[in-house]
Length: 458
Ligand code: IMP
Image 1 (cartoon, rainbow, N blue to C red):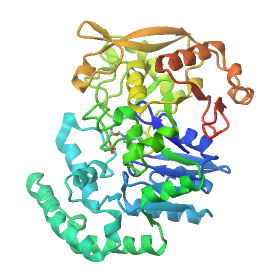
Image 2 (image 1 turned 90 degrees about the horizontal axis):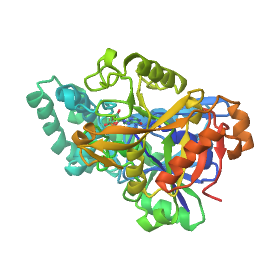
Image 3 (image 1 turned 30 degrees about the horizontal axis):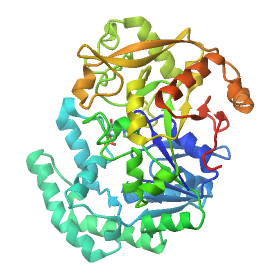
Image 4 (image 1 turned 90 degrees about the vertical axis):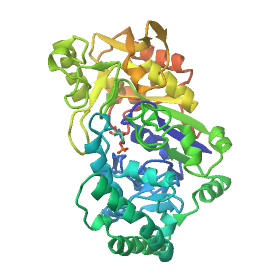
């Protein structure tokens, strides 16, 4: 069977921990979208591994698959594999021949366009994700299978590279180097193709996964980013360029929708909200200069709440470690946004929920939740379709009594009933509103600090 793991908010919900937790019972862990924009840390036998492309299951001896919906930077792929090998692991990673390849000009153009866009910039990771998906849709991309076939690779590069070079030089007025040089790209990427072939890493993803399922294997489909970063269902244009939602799991692997639908789809919810990058955020607390629109330190998130809110935001940010893993820059934080979650529950069809980080909110007198929005004088319960409309939404809050800080490791051992009562009330509200049962509750950063209510593979 399959278990699909989907972020229900704006990424960084703690999906890695859940993949880790349930991944023990999985034989294969496949990613279905995104590329090396998905930084995560895996702790195994006391060792920390930082990965951004290779599925985390590969650290634990599972087969890791990058599906056709992924965009693959071979340089990152082999760097991560080599690092894991140097540390004594034997990662088994397979890559779909249908997946598109991130080339150096995609990375260069990602940076160039972000600069040019100014207010419309999504604050991308500058890994070339958007430009690669653009070329996929424009039918001028290079696929992993093309790297194994030098004549096709050469033909594709000869068509596309002059266009990219002209775009950089003539439209954006930038100097270009070897990242736009056909011969250099051809030699480098042909060699990557040779290595992929030598190591037998390429697969026809849908067939590979279906064969494993037919043989009785458990397959986990690991979504990166989150529903509100989805190119179709997210807060466009402040989104990534792929479909993290559960529908992406079928298109991005080649497994049929009925196969995915026969399994479980677990929504990962962070008990509050965090956001990297710009765009509206109706439940935001305080603000972060350069990311919160019209940010004014004296005025909090533009609502006049000022210093108290700023202090609360800082406390949650510090407690939850809400600072970028690579850049160290503070993430924006806010209360839970229920209209965002109702939208996610519908778009993904969650069969279960894992709610993370309830320990981060402990010790507060009250915990607020954005229950609905006031939008142009009306109360609405889900996100409106455009981001401009979302920016006009004012959250209507519901208050919950806070819960104490307790020995969360003991809570994780003792089970759901050991969670402080007020926190359970909060969890049950989320479950009722989203019409999905709680499968797991994250009560701390460690793998063992999770209350497991249900194991989807059992
Ligand atoms: P891109 O995916 O690099 O094109 O970035 C597009 C948007 O998605 C930006 O706002 C990024 O900050 C955001 N984003 C991409 N990957 C992640 C992630 O793994 N966690 C949180 N935000 C992400």
